[in-house]
Amino acid sequence: MQGLLALHLSALLAAVESQKQCLDNPLHGVQNSPSLLQTSRLQDVQVDMAALHRVRDHCLTQYIDKVNSASSGFTLDSMKQIIRSQDRVAKQSERKLVLCAGQGTTATVGVAFALEALHLHGYHWTHEVATANENVLKGELPAYVQSIWDMLQSGEENCRAALAEYDFTTLPSDVDYVSDTPFPETFLVFYQQFPQAKVILSTRPAAEWVQKRRAHSGTPAPVLNPCGAGSIGNYSDQQLEIFFDAYNELVRCVVPQENLLEIDAISKTIDMPEEFLQFLSNYSLPSPAEQLIYNAEKWLNDVKELIKKRLVR
Image 1 (cartoon, helix red, strand yellow):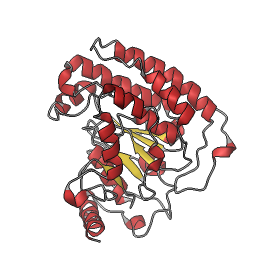
Image 2 (cartoon, rainbow, N blue to C red):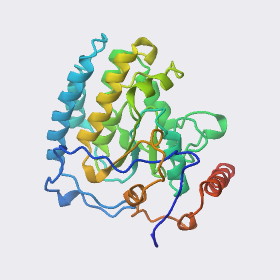
Image 3 (spheres, rainbow, N blue to C red):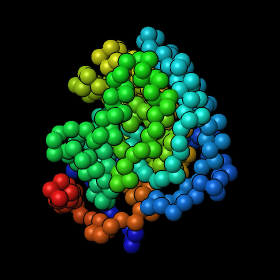
Image 4 (cartoon, rainbow, N blue to C red):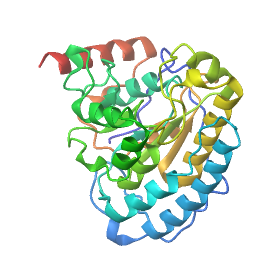
């Protein structure tokens, strides 16, 4: 990319906090494996898969304990079995993409707008901002997303069995990022199959998130692999806060800090920092994305035009 992009998103992303890293992330400083290196639109950050699995297992144990501490009646004791099954049968892709891991109602639409402004194309439920959705004009989910959603809705036992063997690497090649449900719910198994992914974790204070998320009463509870968990309406505010914080801590723990960007685009009122641009700075951005150096109003108009052109062709 030529020069430094100065993209301002204050119209949609009230602002972005500078990158917050998990200081005790056990992956920091791990020797990386050269076998995973490949040319990509993203900067190569190599991952030692054996080390990743060790870290993941440690983080997962902590996560399960925290979720079970909510005394909600829902437990994740089967989660390790699902992960072990994935270790045996799952494919792993060296493909680089952006995994937006933030739970819904954490400015995830704004993050999708930002990625689309950089001429990246992806999925965000049925939202029209996400230009990789082949069914957006019909107001329907992409076929890839629909299949995952159907799996999560297939009943507790069927869901667990299917999730243990699900091949997420069938993601279409024209998809640069994934965002919103069902990707936070399947974060760990998805990330296990795309260990080179850049991860954007959008957050906000837990109590505030719960109050805002209550407006979406039919959405899944914010837990990994929510087979049989039901919707957020089944849980108290305190339980949802525990789930929400435990999930965010898991993402921070699992993802190497070089591949993680955490943003609080709702609570903060500062301009977007250079860290966000640098995080994706090694994309080979197609022209005229390199000229997107506008104020928020003009930027938003350009994004709308970009979306319109993508949808009508």
